[in-house]
Image 1 (cartoon, rainbow, N blue to C red):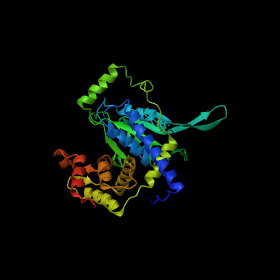
Image 2: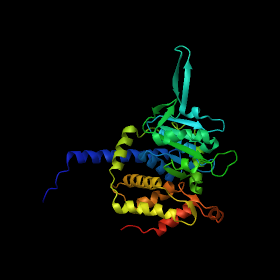
Image 3: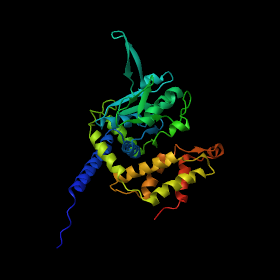
Image 4: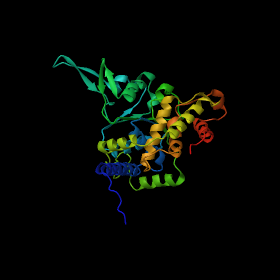
Length: 333
């Protein structure tokens, strides 16, 4: 019998690191499930965003565990986290920080705001005016905050997880398209199924307290080293020219849709490619296939298109447009 050629030491070590990082992120999803029932797509989306260095907008009616989902993610990671409840009187300096006068030294010193963290929960982001909403733009895009002309780098990793309510618009300030485009994913958090809702009530009857995640048995199962290894592996995931062309064709097709006044931009195409690579790696492959692109198309693109008023009146939704585009664009073989 002919012996198999030995695997190079460096390659073997890389494979072990990839497997360990993937296992830690799989454990992360399982850990969050101890607190959040029936929201697996949203959990997966948060993990994908961490891998892609992106940000997430969570949309759902009140009471579907949007905030709990992000808190459980933070509790499952060895990362610093902060929460900001967005209100109409919130000021940009309440987010970014400000210069404070120190009477002892007769000098101004910078007092960092809550944005200087690894995981920022921006709760009900659409309840604060555009001026304060825009204070997050530089942080989300440039990973820094400029105060008094001085840029200050944010920690790495850095992720903004923002929540908003899709049914109550009184007293809210809808995010403009330019700001929505800064979010890598828009995840919808639906009402649970009957079985999942029974599970939720059973947990509460057994003493589950959503304000005390430690008592629920949630503990950190992944940290910065795991994320760094995973991101390196995702960056090495192969993308064939055919897959790149498939992503471009999907995005270009949205620009020709009669239901849309605004299609997906090239930034949206790069975002879809990034999320598809992350999903491919999470599922155990080092190359992207068309199904990876399809799996992430809705959460990656639904907030990057704009419906025509007449289409909206006819009941057309962003998801239905993207689904139709996916059905029309030829799949590479």
